[in-house]
Image (tube, rainbow, N blue to C red; front, side, top):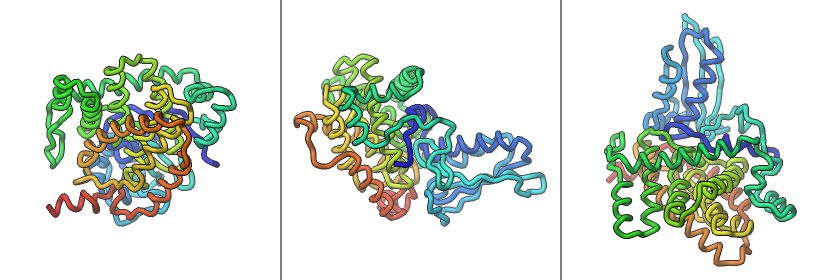
Length: 402
């Protein structure tokens, strides 16, 4: 593989929802372009494809204007133009006092808050950290060296990686706690009521593990939908899956902080494999690349927590992604609310089930994670644009017709 995997610091980011590709990515791009053009009189941002189609619901214009303030920003919406490299394209222009362009930058928000220029999947200043980029390669390395996925990460990351993972764990927990503590209606035309608190009260009555998973996943996902601070895992749209299952297991099964940290690392390696070899962008491959990827990450990590071998871990991750193949990204009104919030809760529980299934076997399986990742990529590229974060098809269309 030509592409190398970045550090987990680039996969796990802390920021405001509701969308890593439509909010966090444009924010990072606007900040960088603003800093590179301090003498500009004003700016213009032309949004293409999915960024234009669902940008209003995802606060794309709001975050660009806020980031570049106090200087004026003109937003141009061009959902009719879909760039070949990626649907989330934008052209940033610096303008002089006469409105002439003095500098411009065409950049793409490729998922998880990451940016790319055409022909290059990554424009971050972060170094390419990992020498191996496929699950088959990494599994072989672990077996040859009698190491775990956690060992693999620690041998390649910088020495401060555990500080970052600690911060990520704490931010995930905070998103759950804050989500459970509020009953505010989620912003937007849908006027959705939060459900996390209701589910948590039900858990306290029933002590049912699945209900706790739902409650925690809903809490984090509802925080994201409200534009609050969450962790990209691997995206904002899938921000409830990992916290939902990891902290439900922590509280229900008495896991330690260190075990949760290791689960986050294992999940991160799997997410990095998917991001590097396919995509985690709903606008590029549909929700199979967001919630599907998160479920795969979580499933492999759950198998790790349950003492699974590297084969069990790979199998669990494969099962979870395989059974999300073809999942569309069809957000109603362009908000990360319906079906996104409920989908996070379902995927958190499905991750546990995928790991449970894999753990009953000896770890042998016919289809590899790498094969499913490649299949997911091809499926996403073949998917019609109306099913890829444009709010023009699927549930987004039929919600209106009803």
